[in-house]
Amino acid sequence: MNTKVKNIEKKLLSDNWYTLNTYSFDYQKPNGEWGRQEREAYDRGNGATILLYNSFKGSVILIRQFRLPTYVIW
Image (cartoon, rainbow, N blue to C red; front, side):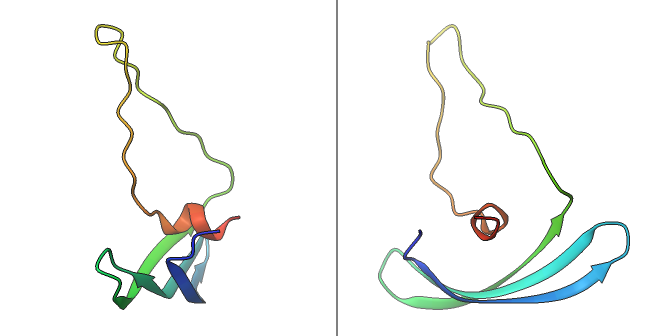
């Protein structure tokens, strides 16, 4: 569980073709301060991802980035 996220509030915006929700939450910044943020996210069911591999260098690039839709499904 990510301890940098708290007080998640979910509001349904649309349930027409897919489900569209807006989320309000508090997120802790790198300097330790808390800030309120909002995100909209579609829920379209199962998805897929890809991990790109550079065969010339024999490596992949990983980035640490918070993604709310991934966080709220768990």
